[in-house]
Amino acid sequence: MVEIVVVRTTNSVVYDPRVKKIAVSLKKRYSINCLGWNRDAVSEEKINSYVVKLELFDLKTSVWKPSLIRIFIRLLFFAPAYWAWVFFKLLVSRPQVAHACDLDSVLPCYIYKILLRKKLVFDVFDRYAMTFIPKKFKKLYRILNFTEEFFSKHSDVLIVANGQNALSTFQKRPSRSEIILNYPNDFETGGSHSARKNEIFTIAFTGHIRRHRGLETLASVMRDLKDIQLVITGRNEDNVLLNDIKNIQNVRYLGILDDSALLEIERSANAMFAFYDPVFFQNNMPLPNKIFEAMMCSTPIVTNIAKEIVNESDCGIVVEYDNMEQIKEAIVTLRDDPHLCRRLGENGRNAFVKKYNWNLMEQKLYEIYDTLLPTKVI
Image (cartoon, rainbow, N blue to C red; front, top):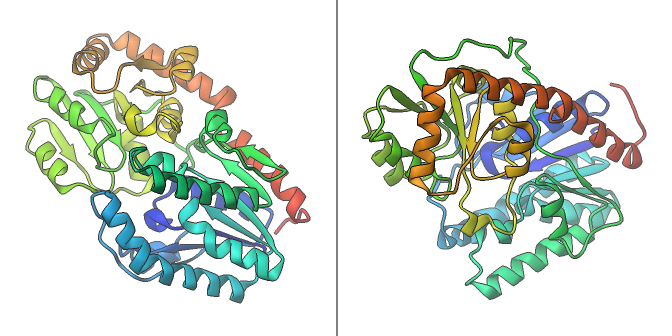
């Protein structure tokens, strides 16, 4: 009997590191399946080789440049079919707990909970309204925010991924709310964290190709720099931006990589970048796993977020978003001072081992599920 079903709408699940970590951890104690949406036409080989049984709603949709109109099109024409499919799969497998990841996955899980008197874990990776809806759309913002608060209040457990600041934005919560930060697993492939860095100073940007993540500014800075290369990986969500970037001589786009290849890029990079536009994320400033992956890989991070963590750990350089001079200065400083690079990387690695690794979050996850299900070793 399946005890837990994890539902995730975006990223076709296979490309989502947080879902994979949750699935691997829960698999140690429970019977677990994952449901998702095969929007990116993921191959059968990838689906069948996933860490747990994975079923995907097989309807390919374009990876659109994010906009409100396109979000509505997806919700109106595609999401209801997907939600119906998820609900049917839940009825067939009859899990004791539905673990819904984000607002776009929770509706069928909530209906399943109510009708069959099962448990619902609402795992919020990002506050939907605060992340995707500009506040000038006041009515839409209030509607989505109210909806998210409703499902939060009526879940059995609320989990947030972005720390206390994100949790405090919920005015309505269930009796149990927990923070499970998006820390990485420590080198599942078993390699040493001290992999040789690139001889040519290399910056890694390992996120989706979209605006409001600082990629436009970073690419502009790269036009004026020599003896430095920028390596970009991730799903393309903006063809115009990607084409502009690819025309820069010292920039390489490697597409979507599997976990092991992505890890090698991050381990061998001389620095990593993580940027979030504060105009869009000011009320839900995330703690992205890229910062903690950089720590794990002994790679200095240049970022405009998580200032307290970066400064306390002394693992990177904090700059202002969209400040070309500060970004350029940070790159040149790291390029010209290999001893500083090494020290920042080692500091990050030490902080990761002590307090920023997934093993600590795994124990919190078990504590949650111990209250929902009897502990059982598979």
